[in-house]
Image 1 (tube, rainbow, N blue to C red):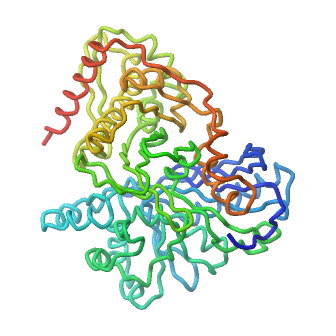
Image 2: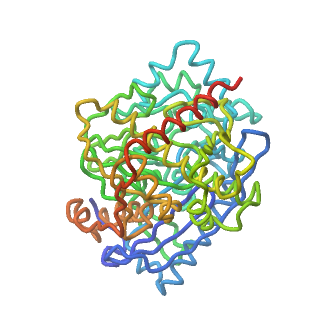
Length: 505
């Protein structure tokens, strides 16, 4: 894969740029994390349904945490073989090529301001083209309508973009630009596949989609493999140049970190939202059940595909219990409370705070609590919040099963990660509702591990895929113990609660 700076160095630095915080983690040559630094950054809500980030603030957290992690590990730039980047997906940044400065705050994947534009495009018959080329649905979640909004609402932006003065990128591209001093404007196939502008079958930006959304091609980054040469950092940032060799959207990085390399393998990440990916191999399976078809990863020019279900609210519902309602002091309390809840109370929470994601894609839906009685306490609310994550995951698995039809093997094991996977109560309930084993890995940092593996493999530090996969180990397997009649009754109650949510005007 070419010559690397510091090729003999045994460490990999991962920048894991998430939705609410940035983490930098140093891994050694055995893929073991040896130092971590983390910083939260500001969530901006200028209007209801709008979510923004200050890309300059994110850049500052990247620099600070990377420097801190390197220092904590007792290393210098010369000890780092390569950098890997995992990033929040779909979040759109547009910046001035001359100054490197963003023209506006980044518009975050959760943002719903372009819902009307998406509805107009759907009503005028464009959904089929979008799905056929990009594998995605017409939803504000993805990047294209965010770019269009920026070009149409920031003064002079459209003219500047058409003149070639502006650059667009998802967060990985913006960080690559900054890390390399403006030398590299690139992304990887997994991030490109989340923009609504990329033909996932041909592996290139699509002229018809660019025209549909009004995005000038001159703004777009070069698309590369997930493990490739993405240039090198400028020497002043870390005291020496470091090669950048791996980039993947965070959910794709988690799939790799979970070693889900065989078709049929599933990983489900429980962070702010929940994202389940099913590896479908080199076949892009079009979804007829409101999932999206996406690029799982691209290595040596070969695209591996996945079916993905995206749930907008998972851990965010626990944050709401803590910060919005003040019912808990810490997320860890929810499992204890749920275990103490009255089993006779069928309280359901549909967490549609920003609409419902897959398989409903109901932008206008809003959160609903149902089944409460005078005896309902915070214990039942905590249980409902944890249970809704499992019910939503089952909705995704049912859609995947329907999309695969006869190809579904039926012996699926779910590999889980993300903050909520630390809750034993939640993972046991997940296994019970899915009627499937749930494996929690020994190394919880799967997103960072995936990005680190891409960079380390490209830099010659880490082994081939088969060897890496053989080293994956589970810390615990949760096996279903719930009787089928109880499982069916609980899931029926959930489906009824969702139907009530969707019926709302």
